[in-house]
Image (cartoon, rainbow, N blue to C red; front, side, top):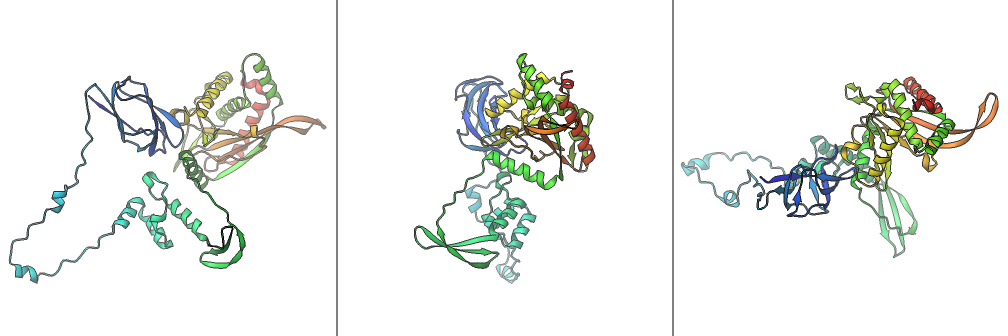
Amino acid sequence: MATEITMPKLSDTMTEGRLISWKKSVGEKVERGDIIAEVETDKANMELESFTSGILLETRVKAGDMAPVGTVIAIVGEAGESMQMPEKKGVPSPMETEKPQSEPVGDVREKERLPEPEKTAVEPAGEQAEAEKASPMVRRLAREQGIDLKLVNGSGPDGRILREDVELFLKEKQVKAEVQVEDEKQVKVQVKVEGKTLGPEPSIPVVEVATLPLSRMRAAIARTVSRAWREIPHFTVTVAVDMGEAEEVRRELKESGTPLSINDLIIKAAALALVKFPQVNNSFAGDRITVNSGINIGLAVSLEEGLVIPVIKGCEGLSLKKIAGRSRELVERAKNGKISEAEIGGGTFSISNLGMFGVEEFMAVIQPPQGAILAIGAVRDEAVVRNGLIAAARIMRVTLSADHRLIDGAYAARFLQELKRVLENPVTMLV
């Protein structure tokens, strides 16, 4: 029996996907587990596996086209089989819609004496479309602000207009410029703020402004960080860590055939600290706290079009060597666009490292629904005082961004003290 292959939901925020390419051709044999297509989601490019065996009978989406989640994109079955497109139900045929209704039986004069039925206001087609694209609350906000929803670009599923879209449109319209072309090189500009003219500006050269549409990944990042900054009460705590001993251990292990990065040491140290301070590993869930039993640490990986955060699962039970191997594998898959949804989901804590760019200190935005994220700065030579004497040290600053609904300042500070203790005594990570 022929089987439908549908566009899967490959991420929690995915509503549609772009079919990048078909890996199998029509008429070709397909085994269960074979990669039949490559799909672009809002987070990464992912490979689509076939969950059935047979012949690829038909492809219904062309390479490069978008398809909503759940759309049938291909048919797999036995040679000679076919599957017809389902007919739409509940839609009257043209003959049915044009068929005149029979006149009611009765005295025409009696009918003339009856009062005209009260006409029900019919919402115009344009307003019906707006109603489908926006909630009543959003439509009311638009009416109050005098905004035509047809001019607003929706960022929700299927182009649905959200409250944030209306607020963004309103902000963009608060400052307007009326431009009169003087000649090919100069213009006169009048700036208006909320309809009030502030006065003409001197003639200025014409400047062409280009706009770029958001990529799917950048749009997903925008939604995530906006939600995090709007909903999570962030606070930050920073400590300076002497990385001299950690760098020496890393050097010795590398010489013995076990390559490690500073990030690997930080991941292992963070896992050990999270075991002692488990609240930092918890998640906020509305009116309750989710206690995560496993320590799954996400590692922010920068890509040309944005970033992804692959997750190393079960860090509390992994050796330093296994963490290093898993980290290298995930980073390579992320940079090659081969990361899977399972490998970027389920994180309970995250680490973002900008030290390789010379950044000394920064704060990172928490990834919902996680409760904290660790920002890593560069390891630098600094002068410190030891036993009353000035000495050189290799200092790295780490900043914990924490959700104040879950974690208090003193608890966050003790977590960082433990992290600092482990990193400055790296032999504890080798046990």
